Length: 398
Image 1 (cartoon, one colour):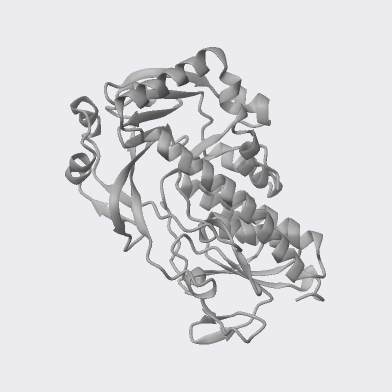
Image 2: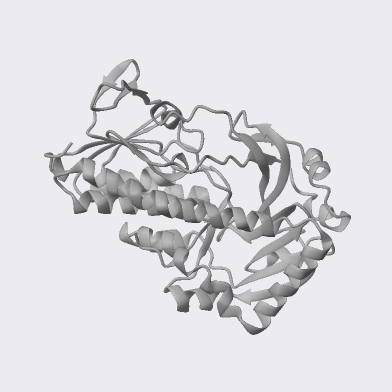
């Protein structure tokens, strides 16, 4: 793997989500011959709302896509915190200007499908080959130097294979021996609603975070389409995830989440609710093996309590491209450096996400009261301290 120039590298990217598309674009910028394989057909309305923080926007700017993403999203004015029990306000923080002043950028709330659309348009403009409806699987033997691809019954050889096929990655199970079933301790219910008939608290250009007992939910606008994204997360009794998501009835959602009657009345217009198992994967010791690297959720599926899923994926793509740029004649060294850097970062992100889960889902009344008092004091007297603990995340540039 050591003597081939970047411009001659033949790269396969497995998966056309945020991580796969961004990686394909950044490697194409280096002059690599990139082919993307996506087992599903193109989807116009994929996923739900996401948040892009400064670290993710930094990568999009390197792809000259920052403005295109901003045009399809909104920059929230405030972060508003509530006690779910009585919808009582804990306090609010102005974030639009604070984040811009501290990190050079505020953050963007948008629909995931818009980000995918922007990335796909760039992929097509760069004439990167992308194959939809084709599943690419690994051909792997321990005694071989390279991993190859099986696609449509044919063997495909590539210098580098970037695996971006999500948290249930088949490649990760086979190449990295992640075969154990994973017990699920969290579930998320997600839906997007128009503003019509919603209470005023949901209509403002804010991120609203409601803390409940053993659960929480978040709302924010998804962009200029006038829709509001709702995400409800709760602890579950352990079970094994069989699929990526399942459609549930509104009644099942309301019964399962046991919402306050006043809050339940807000969702009269809900028609379709999707329930996602929040799948965690173990912290990998390496995200590289032979000529294969993992990016995005394939590298690490973690609790979503830092809103860093898409940002982590963009970071992965940027760091991988940088490591290959740094060692243009030694791909093996580049991939090992990428793995070392990302594993260290993923460990830190996973740790803080797990801590947030505990804090968001406090169940004992006394602990909740202490936490809410702490938040009120921070908001009133030391708002900069609230953001200081996030500097290592939002200032990251690889």
